[in-house]
Image (cartoon, rainbow, N blue to C red; front, side, top):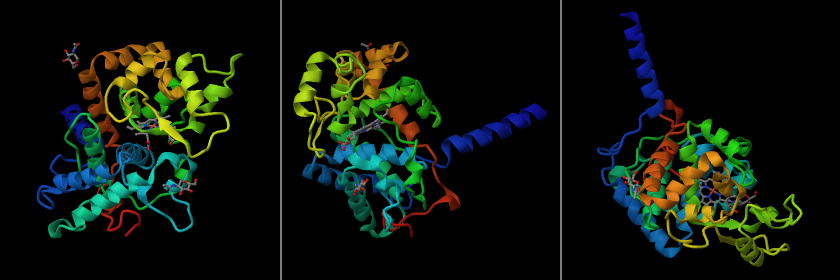
Length: 323
Ligand code: HEM
Ligand SMILES: *[C@@H]1O[C@H](CO)[C@@H](O)[C@H](O)[C@H]1NC(C)=O
Ligand SMILES: CC(=O)N[C@H]1CO[C@H](CO)[C@@H](O)[C@@H]1O
């Protein structure tokens, strides 16, 4: 009898910690149309600028990695000491923040929804919507996260992966959040849209530790193209498309690029250089359905990191300020 009770208890605890209180229809009674309200606002913003898509997607990733998916990344501080003030935020283009703020305004504009939907959940929905808008898979999102009350510049340290990282380090970082090697490879596919500043990879073009100074895992023609777009003395504001083939489409071309030595960062190319991950890259390059299934699975897991419920959080009135 005893082991059975223990098992039941254990599974209850596990269930609680892995799924917190997330539900597909969390707002069914409080704000039944929340998903379509958010979708319209995101669509409108996307029509104004394409950057909406990559900016929102990356914002979501950064939010979840630091203190969990609790919209802490959106908080501003008077003395520039919030997460968003960390230098790693370079690409956290204002359009991602703006997307959430506009969607929140649209939700709160509906009487019954006012102050019922968290900024963290709006970011999750907006991310799903930008992926669909750029041609990626559509999927149901789990909801029910509360917004965190803390955001510090220091908490970003060691949480956001660096573009120079190789497989082992990336894998270890993702593993601390329960994300597997397949999750890492699938989520990296997000680099199929969006931009990077030249400084994030110029070392591979000019200062690599090899006789040629160029990273040997870079396709030579691609290295020449990149040198053309990113001269050594480049304007630091210049950003280039990470997927040069189909820069505005959420597809599996990212993996096809890796097969041809056309991964922009070391953290991208390492997925193909490494024997252990190469076959998964090959699978995703060959079979876009397999990629999409793995991506949806992984981004759902990403959305479960550090979810706050009960008295751990609140529903912010203004996404940039704690209530
Ligand atoms: C695996 C480790 C990862 C590393 C090292 C990494 C690093 C970077 C870097 C350095 C940039 C360019 C920033 C800039 O110069 O403006 C970037 C952009 C981007 N990243 Fe990642 N990233 C990783 C994973 C992810 C994941 C998991 C996602 C989302 C699921 C993601 C989504 C994006 C997007 C969409 C952009 C483009 C942002 C824009 O155009 O505004 N990245 N990433
Ligand atoms: C692609 O992957 C999907 C999902 O795993 C699978 O059902 C399908 O058979 C695969 N297609 C090919 C051509 O291998
Ligand atoms: C969007 C955003 O918050 N950008 C900030 C990123 O960090 C730099 C300083 O590191 C700030 O100047 C930006 O305003």
